[in-house]
Length: 458
Ligand SMILES: C[S@@+](CC[C@H](N)C(=O)[O-])C[C@H]1O[C@@H](n2cnc3c(N)ncnc32)[C@H](O)[C@@H]1O
Ligand code: SF4
Image (cartoon, rainbow, N blue to C red; front, side, top):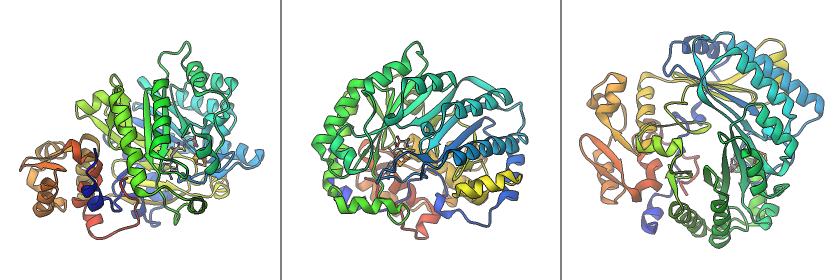
């Protein structure tokens, strides 16, 4: 199915474009004062909706593949102090937000949000529910590790208002889980899902998988995906294992166990892609899948898909993202701002009434244009130049000039069957899906200036 020649040619490191500019461009000249100014200004920025990200950094056991901002669970006093600091930080920032604006999305990520007492999450949600107005059917989402879910915890999480649960399965094969130091779910995933959805038809369940881990083969990963399909999740993600040991040192341990060859990894992707698309799931971007009536599937068809650090979203739920907790990245129209990575520093500074922004980025006017172009390509698999021009108030030519639009390179992509090209439009072909990041990188002045520390597309 996948053209091997093209893969050889294009499977080289390119940014993931979960943000533009990518997070490695953030600078430490951007501190709390600049962030607070941006928070004030953001009351006038579009889209008006408020999206809230809360980072719970703790994990009960560290998985060797982990590329997330996660830390081993600390003593109860530290977790308590972290929870208090989160509440404090939320009050400090949200007191500056215009309360006529509505919240469209809350997302808890980690680490493992269900590694802390459920009452803590309840308290934070109550604070947000009582502070803001919400759009109808807002998304209140949480990433959970199924190894630690109990009936009691699930009841608490449902009471706290969560309506989307992402269960980190990674693989159903216990040999794979053992090799990466991960506990298996405490009860059958079918039972977990049934309990979450029981009497709550509005609750959606996503399942997360990773391919490219030790002990995985195309054959056993296909079995895992087959099992997943039988569970009928609303959405499913198959992340390509990103091996970046220079960032996540713990990943070095996997090199000792042995990672699958890149050809085998490609076969895993192919197996998952064909199984899922033949069983009623639509591919959203490279690694996400959603069922036919899912909001994301519909948004993709209508070219209304959006993306932030938390994943794909629609124009309905998209908003300015205000992030809370260690490593949290706020994504506002003109600015990105990231909090400190140190739990102790975070608690100490917030207790003194200071924010902990350690780095960030204020986009130039040109970068706002490039971001729109790259997002449009990454989410909706096309660039209609005058559509973007109309949205931003420029001509098509002006938009092109702000990118590194290179007709020769684009013609090469076209000759390789990755895109179809016209004056008005770049359209990714079905075969080109895998190489969207390469096409995006060709239009990106920052990447063209030479940056290489990224993972490969597959
Ligand atoms: C914060 S974790 C999810 C919640 C919980 N900590 C868990 O593991 O179940 C987010 C997801 O990122 C994915 N992930 C983590 N490290 C990764 C890596 N190095 N490459 C690709 N995906 C990764 C995993 O699928 C994981 O479920
Ligand atoms: S994958 Fe999840 S549980 Fe494992 S270390 Fe990373 S954040 Fe923690």
